[in-house]
Each structure stands twice: as C-alpha cells, then as structure tokens.
Length: 101
Image 1 (cartoon, helix red, strand yellow):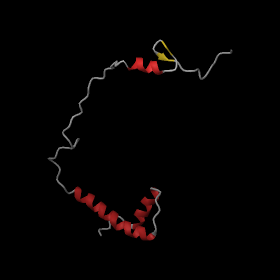
Image 2 (spheres, one colour):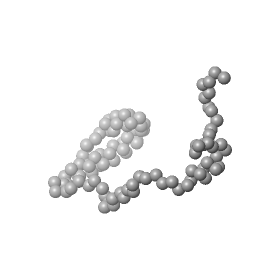
Image 3 (cartoon, one colour):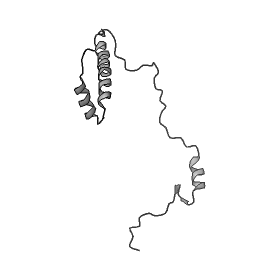
Image 4 (cartoon, rainbow, N blue to C red):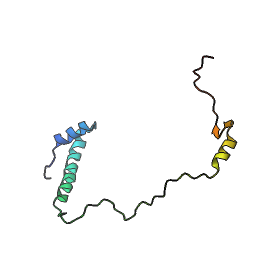
C-alpha cells in the first residue's frame, strides 16, 4: 500500500458524506480507496498529447424534424367527448368566483 490516503482521512470524508462506518469497515475501506486513488494516478501517466477529446462515443447525429403543429382533426373528437364546450374550447366550472353575487 502506497499510503495515499490514511484511515483518518477516510473517516473524515465519510463524516462529510454523512456515512458511518465501524472500525472494521474503516480498516477494510482504507486500502480499497488507496488502490482506487492509485488507479487514477496511473491514468495521469498516460500520454494523451496527441489524442483528441472525446465529446461523443458514437457517430450518431440527432435528426430533428421541423417543429410544426399538425391539425389531425383531434380537437373535434376531443370537444365531442367534453361535457360542455363553446367556440372550440372546453368549458369548466368556475373555481374562484370573485363576483359579489
């Protein structure tokens, strides 16, 4: 173990994340996290100077259609099923009546 992280640091990070571990769990977790940090350190050793950044892992491109409203005659069927309709709108009961009647 290269001691990139110690038990107290693991405990501190766990407390920040509002996690609770027993002493045995901390003893097991510390070397595992140290190994994970080591893996990330090994990535920094890779020469990526001539590698283009990956912005998309596939070559697929989104195909967008023009956003045009289509009238498929559904409004007439909707209004036909509404309990009350007038001038192309569904009439609903008044919820808040501000009149003094």
